[in-house]
Length: 229
Image 1: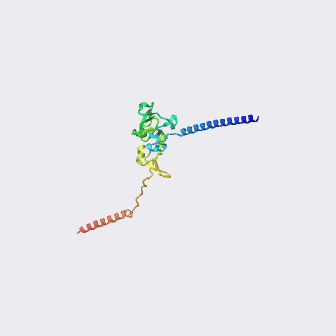
Image 2: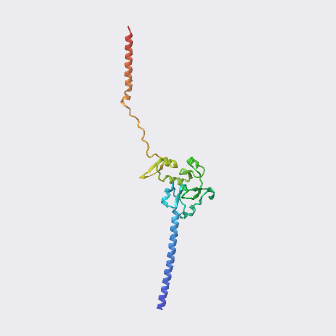
């Protein structure tokens, strides 16, 4: 009896341990899936002016139009955000155009992106009536949310801001002496004009004029008397 009882208890303990390991494995697998899903949910397009704005995301990213995109492997972003790769417009869907990267020598693919219009010539006025009323990077009609984020990217000089259409000035960020962003208010306005002080010579001018006229009149009178025989 004792031997059978010990054997039964050992079997129950073994079954319990196996079941526990299986549940633990399921929990870890489920947790792994949640982490992976969370990482994908956080992936959103970062705005860019050129590739340097995408460097912080890794070598897999490059700047297309005004967004950083993982052109080498887009599995790192949500499936609904992925774009079709292309080399010409015919490979894209309706309302899309194939936008090639400017560095064709090193990045020989493009992305099929919504064709909202070109605004190189007249800025935002070229985008009116097309559904997207902002002009991103001085070239592409875009949504307001991208335009707003682009304006907050660092700038180097006033000409850059004007050329991209993000403002008239390159202004220092309040509380940060090393970063500047585009703005519409001159950070170094000219001093206000000051009125010239009145000088003593100007205030005494009427008296000088009266005195001079008196002398001229006196000389004229004396000349008349001198002519009388």
